[in-house]
Amino acid sequence: MPGRPCEAAPQLRSPGPFTADNLRPGDSYELSHGHPILCLPTGGRGAKAASVGDGVLASDPAVQDVGVDTGFSPSSDILRAPDLAVGKIPDEPGWVHGVPPLAVEYADTGQDEADLPVKIQELLAAGTRYVWVVRLTGPRRVEIHQPGQGLRIAHPGEQLEAPGVLANPVPVEALYDRKTSREVIFRNLLQRQGYGSLEDVRAEGEIEGLRKAVVMILTARGLTVTDDLKTALANSSDLEILEAILRQAATVSSAAEILAALQG
Image: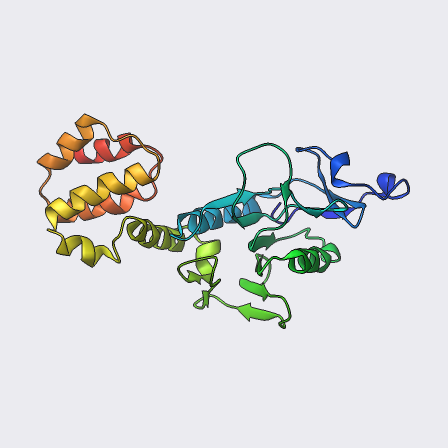
């Protein structure tokens, strides 16, 4: 969990070593070479930032799944749950075998700095290609860890890349700033529907292209597009309104919000 205090559990250290099979989904522990690591709930800032990053990574055209606090077990004596994990995650109960190609950790007040490098090395040693540590205390920054490479640090204004995992670069700020994340999500969702940018949508016939893009983005996000909404879109011919509606389509929680905006 982002910024959660994690520490070796004294009451369980003596009887070890444990295996991943000794832990159940919902238990507040990770496992490092058979030793349990107690992980407590996150704070508000860390949770908010992680939700922002989740949306950005999940919208990338190359991403299949993003897991939040998903337990990965590359061996019987290791169980690690990155704050965000990008990769293929089975739709079934239990721990995920192996490790994700990209793991993101949010480090805030209370972070166990002793365990964090151990966790990073265990993930990299088991096959994770990139570990990003988003630092929420002090100057905002992202620490980049890769196998066989030294630590690199990216600052606001710079881009993060994960070739082979993500199709697009990620601005550092998009992992914690809601406004920046919306722009990235908007770009990614357009690309998922075959558009390189908003200009490509305009080129398809401006008004009609915008209407079509609204429906495609809502559908791609799993939201139901009703006949009433289709009618409202067909009756709207204001370019500026449709462009605003298109941007909203990337972040609204229901298609009803789009209908209300058109009718308002």
